[in-house]
Image 1 (cartoon, rainbow, N blue to C red):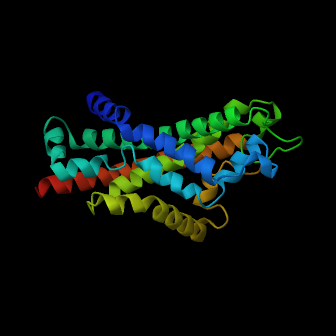
Image 2 (tube, rainbow, N blue to C red):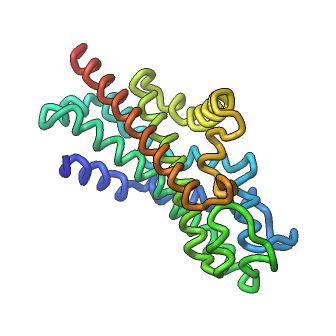
Image 3 (cartoon, helix red, strand yellow):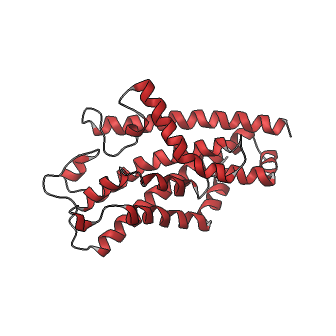
Length: 252
């Protein structure tokens, strides 16, 4: 298992696509987002930007590093060689971890790059306007812990992109087509939002991962729910991945 994960993560971190994806996330936030001259502080800019429709383009960049990892293995039948050397479950779980982590890291590092660029370009830009405290992790804003605030928000968004990337990877087992794969994050996101609102009402999928929303103003509870749901979805997708890989292997 450890060898599988190390090999997959090495493929991710050495890939030029990982760097391009990080730059792409920062570029989307920077180009299409709010600007300081529009009267926003840095935190207000960030909160405004992640709530806009263009943020959906970020999800595509987040699956770029390794979202098609399984699809690549299927096209060249490399997965058969890897599975022969170990168990199907280990192979699938390793791929799932690598896809999830690469997508989450892309969001986290892309957000960090965006904040760094804005802070360098607008060095006099204040972190937050006076008395502006809202959204998840607001206690960090109140205590002037701005860097931890951005890190936690990007982690929460990273959990979302990780799940979307893994969902796309599972779908690639049914339709091995990269163009289809890269169109899935936005489609999957809206589908999950729509279905969750039907089942759970106002507390839909988008609110679970939104850094702008907390349950009963309880930051810890909200973040724990996000983590738990992410773990549940991860486990479900890994089970589907494992079952599909075994069927494909048995069918040759």
